[in-house]
Length: 306
Image 1 (cartoon, rainbow, N blue to C red):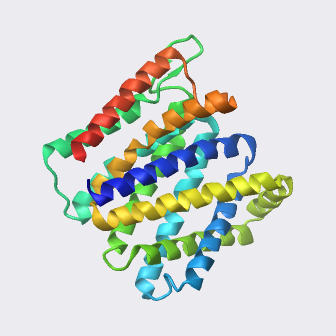
Image 2 (image 1 turned 90 degrees about the vertical axis):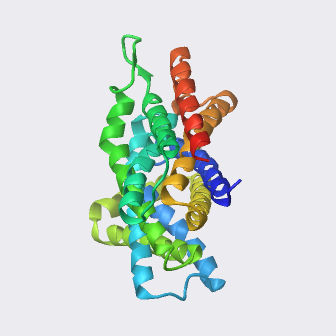
Image 3 (image 1 turned 90 degrees about the horizontal axis):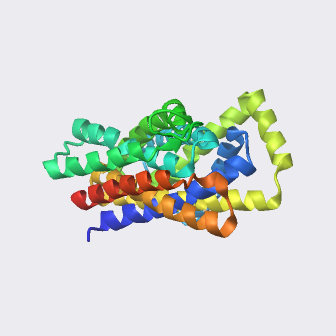
């Protein structure tokens, strides 16, 4: 099996874990999302300190540094919209909607990377995206199942879809930079870019500064620990995806990473049973059935492209 496939699948698993933990953080710990972004960037900076001590990422040209910093800023733009989406939408739904990235990635791959595939690959992408749409299913107040309306869909149109557009640009940009530099260098300077971005907002926005101070005072030590763990897992997923890009095409790598909702569904069920966390997902029988079919579509899609 191709190395890029295993790397992409591993990134999907790590991000599935992050999705579950992020929902808990958003619902129970941090309501002000800028505070989360700032804390995330501080964790990313600790990684950079370790890498700098090892001499990683420091030797490169200003062009690569600038583009990598831009990639880091784009990622945090996506993160903000992602946290907003998690406020009201179910975590398996948010995770599934994120898999719309391959639609945009295919466009960027076609336009900028001369990526061309046979009809089976594009059929696989259609299967994955179709599954991602129908996994939005939820019940309305009259016990009717709806897909394109309701809380999940509002969250999608306001936050997640704009977010994945930004994320797809981030992916395409990183793919381009990999032609000029290595994964660790991009990873290093993107984290620096994110830290510069959040620090600038903290410095010049009184609203963000006040909200962050209020959040910092209210958080317990276990909350800081959980945030740190989440961001380290997230960073590991980012690096694995970068490595996947270095050996695979942008469309195929992001499409394999679209298996993430499958893993989220499994982990959500386990977390609900073990920890009694109903906020993670709705498990009405009809909803489960629709999502099983949606996940099956996504698995078929992955089989077609791998």
